[in-house]
Image (cartoon, rainbow, N blue to C red; front, side, top):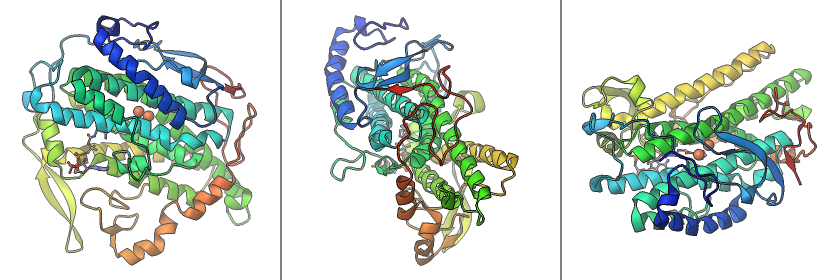
Length: 471
Ligand code: BYC
Ligand code: FE
Ligand code: FE
């Protein structure tokens, strides 16, 4: 099952060679995928050679191969973490029974929906980032963008494999649908709102990989606990790639933050923008915008969907197997802050219905660690500036806080107050316009745009001034 077939048209470790019907179906989907990539993938780089890593195995150490590749020729493969032994369900009502190797009829619709929702975000992110290839502040950053893009493409492959193999005709139709919706398209939008938001300059890309890919980390981790074993194992392998996306976001933002802090120091009025960089207040607004946008991706705080996903074992909590003793979660309550008559009060809700909120808690804690690391680096260079995460109630569009206004500290405020402060709190049209105005692409090896520091070292064992992308 886990032998790697690298020479097949679709590299895989799922035994495609022994399943001609499935192989043919996926080989029919492949050209549609490549057409989609050419239309919606990184703009203007189809013939460039990019120094990329490609997943070629599932071994812990040597799973990736590094080489120059033309992106439309990238070898998108299907890799699942191999099954070591018969695994047991460790989430929900069927805890202790063997995991499922096929989809139980009663859970088919819910599983399909979860897989399609997950799958939809992968091509959506590529579409959102399509034009960023023309705005990268260095060849190093351009390469990282393209690495993230091809891997999101591979994540789509991972989900499409599950749809084709386990969901019959419905699955094949869903797989086609995944290439037909478009991020931001009014008539055929992507499923989740955040994946329709514009990501139109590199600062937003760095926030996206910090905050939105981090939602990916937590959702994939929750699905990696699934009773449906093929889903669990594909998510486990996707998480190995995800770590790099998070690295791109965190270190990229750090390079911008430190650059802005240095430029602010050099300016008589402490204004980084006056020195041609990105203002520190703009960075805080970008964090506010993307973090709040991503909080919505966890769904409602009180969710019967989440309760039934957990009960039936489709989705677990973050590191369910390792962190929790009670995998049934029928007892216990979650104290949730709700707004009643304009006041914040705490109400207990049954734990199972709070599964989305539990995952959001873990996500917020992880984001806080990132911000703390940025702030420590600011302290190291004696900058008085600090970044903060806004409160979870701020600027929400899903769940119990949507439709009400809160300030970044989480206090209820009137809509007029929110609107009067919107451009102080959230990335504004003026911010976006300014950032785009300083976003001339830098294509000379080893050179970086004025508004971002160089990285500490290069990537893939190459130096910083390596020609990561060549024509
Ligand atoms: N936008 O019970 P509720 C990634 C809907 S990122 C629009 O609150 P539930 C990546 C919901 O569908 C990870 N609609 O929520 C990152 C429901 O509709 P119905 C992506 C939303 O069901 C970067 C209603 O509201 N993975 O991989 O628990 C680059 C009430 O539902 C939203 C996943 O999302 C929203 N934000 O849904 C590339 C994992 N939130 O039933 C990739 C799969 C909720 O009233 N998805 N609704 O018609 C899921 O597990 C769940 O569907 C959700 C929460 C987490 C989205
Ligand atoms: Fe992904
Ligand atoms: Fe990612």
